[in-house]
Image (cartoon, rainbow, N blue to C red; front, top):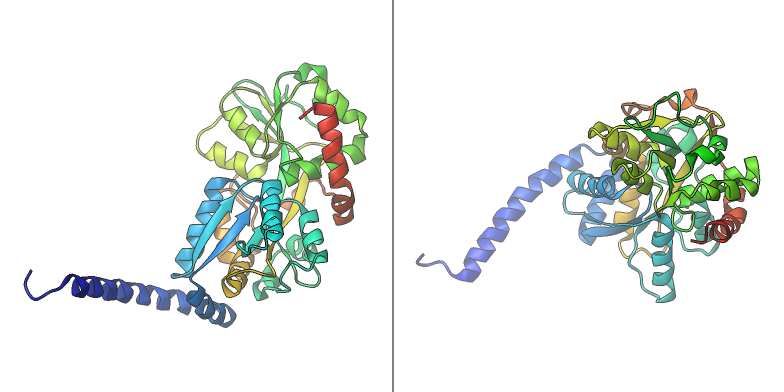
Amino acid sequence: MTGITKRGLIGTTTALAAAAILPARRAAAQDMPAHERQLYEAAQREGELTWYTGQLQAEPSEAIGRAFTERYPGVRCNVVRTTSQVAFQRLSQDARARVAQCDVFSSTDYSHFTYLKGEGRLMAYKPENAAGMVKAARDAADSDGHFQITYLALYMLGRRTDQLSEADAPKSWREITDPKWKDKMAVGHPGFSGAIGNWAIMMKAMYGVGFFREFERNKPQIGRSAGDPVTTLNAGERVVGVGIPSASTLFSISRGNPLALIYPSDGTLLVPAPSAAIGNAPKPNAAKLFMEYVCGPAYSRTVREFRAESLRPEVPPPEGSRPLDEIKTITPTPRQVQTEMTEVRELWRDTFGV
């Protein structure tokens, strides 16, 4: 290869790569409303963002990150997926160490956001795309624009269809305290999962602290995430999942696992789960762009593939789920979550020993 230096070859290759990327960026930009296009231009100079999330499971979370980068070429989304409590602990450790790593934080624990807002650690940014979201998402968002609802999570009971018939399965939360379900159930942990914390608050409100003592006598297998019991049911280790997410269960069913959802007669838990841009985000424009994305239709189309509820009226509900207006739901108030979450975690540890 005469007349071409190594440096020249590298330079040519780089130029060709840039030439291939630029048309993709232009095509993506043409599909954006003006407010997104302006943020995208600024976010390209930052090049990336880091997302701490405990909302969806690992596979859909990674898919969201990829879909964001495909929509906004040149802005990479670094996904850090854990349980909600672990994500919050990591964010808290960053703050104590005076290190800014997280740009956007998502959790199933509403109290995380009221606390962070009170500490002045959230960016006051209300995405323009939020105006087009479904009413349930708009109503639960922060009125000052510090956080938005990005996941309307449904948590219920589930069963293995090859080991437990619909007629024999529990029909309500109250029924899981029946001794016949001893050694047959799996559940997450409120110390790790904000969703299970919300569920515990509602069970205490509806049935008192005695509910937990009766539930403990049935020796449920306790994981961490609300999604862990889905894995346990798939493995055939237990036949009833307690407080399992609709999205993960429906996605598992779509892959051929013998599971079925049970909508409890005493109410399916609905958890409005927020996201927020962090006040000291190292990539603030990319953080704002990500918030626009999760409030827009492209995000709802992505999560729908993993059976999560749509946040946009123009995107239909996921296959296999019931419309929200046909389901009896229960939801703790933001004040209940803020004031009772620590109490129910301690109650859980005292009762179950974990």
